[in-house]
Image (cartoon, rainbow over all chains, first blue to last red; front, top):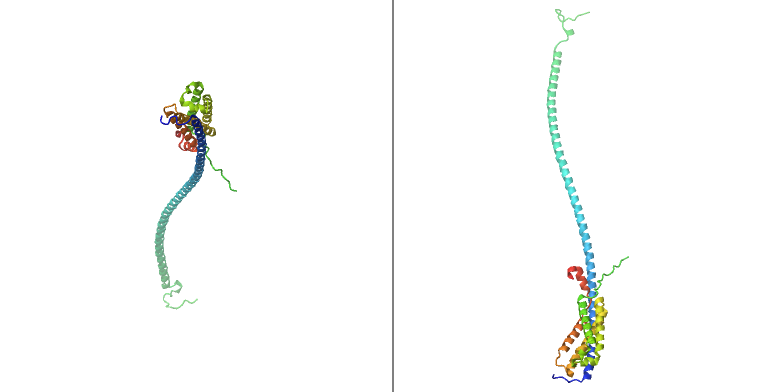
Length: 161
Length: 152
């Protein structure tokens, strides 16, 4: 109790009241500081909400773009499949045409050979006929006509009426 | 015609559980002290309370503590930030008066320890610390929305 009874009771009461008043003012001041901090936090939270809304909007736009890209890719795939299918059909048709062409070519060669044989045969026949005709003609030319035969024993005197 | 979309905002929580907890404890302290002041006024005859009683009669202190406790309890239950700040400021005032009263009683003479003054000063500073902190936080709501119910 070194400092005991160093202060008068009345003064101590005044000091106590002053301390109370000072604490009251300090409390009000701290409340103002706190409310400023609270408002700052609220602004920050609103900014967070705004950024979040922007982010959601961007995410939705991105998802729509991805969906469109997927649909386009699916369409491309369908077209590519159709192209492959048509190419297969064309190739199949070409193969069929090649087979038919080969068959027709073979058939042509066969007919050509038959025609050649027939031509050769015909040519032989014609030659024989021409030769026969020529021979006949020559024979006919070399043989006298019955009306032009000379009378027997009269020499060559013509038969008078 | 351009459409202006509303800017999204976050509704602040009514009051943090931390603030409500401290308000409740402070309210109970005030009510208890008030009851003791009113029910047992003869316990305050010692030299420790001489300055406190010179500032206000002990019965009036009891009434003030009871009223302050009820006010703080109301603020805690309702989550009313304005009332909570007023109540805490008044609590800091009354508590600091008692702290200063104990200190002054030591310096005037009659008590042999500063412990009472130290403890009541600590209570005063606690009130002021809570006054200096936001009682509502919009980030708690955001945290719940992002993390889910387990954030509570």
